Length: 301
Image (cartoon, rainbow, N blue to C red):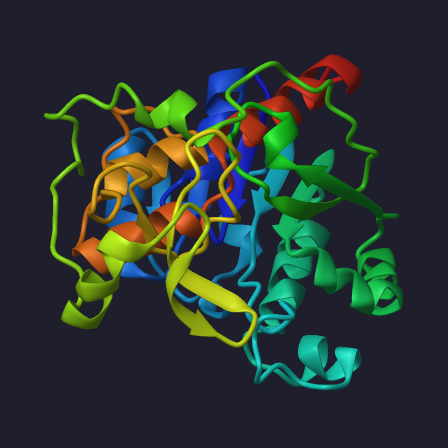
């Protein structure tokens, strides 16, 4: 059973996919305590380092076959109006962007057989710098762009998975439409509590048609009423959606369904933290497809 270390683990979507595929998660790093608690609750067998990754020494970690992780994407995403203009600065000057270098530091020290780092496709604007940094760590890299919609998640979500191997999972049959996963959510499922939106939003919700949002920030719409018979737009940590047929927001559990989390995966913390834990995760079905591809194509002896 190949072993895995998950860096920037969040609530554990990436880990869950690898665990379901048959990998053994041995360690995880998550510096935000509420998310680390969610991770530990769902993966009680894993040692979780609740710490700033910059303060950790990779030599204190066990050797692992695989390192996975998703460093924060804010410095790279185009929807961040404050991202640095020069791509080089996003990696070397932005303190959050520099966390990618921490991922590489762990890879260089632990020397896994495979690593997979998830981020937004816009990080490829730093392609030359990333190639150079991973080369210094002793690895070539591949930029694997995958859409969660092709792997059992009813959501348009393109992400790049930077790895030392080409990752080409077979597309899987799965839900493509929002209503495929929302129509049968048990009322008593965890994290399925109804809540009231802000009053300004609440006044607009009854008038929203499918695909319309109650708020707009530049290119980004929020409180969008989902179209039941289409795929959902990308779920982000700040995303809030309106039910296709009812005049209310989606619950955390319903949003987790759109990300492909099983109903027995429990999110802890306040409601906003729960939503953030859902939206910032790697969808577990996509993670599982990646993990199963690696199991089939890599010699783990």
